[in-house]
Amino acid sequence: MSAEIAALADHRVHIPMSGGAESLNVAAAAAICLYESARALGRR
Image (cartoon, rainbow, N blue to C red; front, side, top):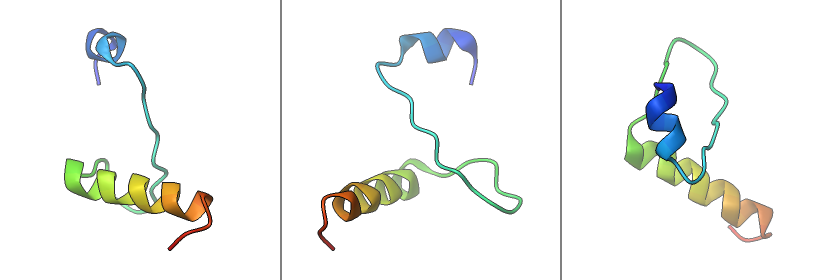
């Protein structure tokens, strides 16, 4: 991501990944974020 694009963002999220993938599509990234948010709140 360029510095110019990063500067336009209100928030940035880092999803640690192992293996060869360098990025996720937005649906997969959103699913991971929602799952982790629910898990942090003690729900499943």
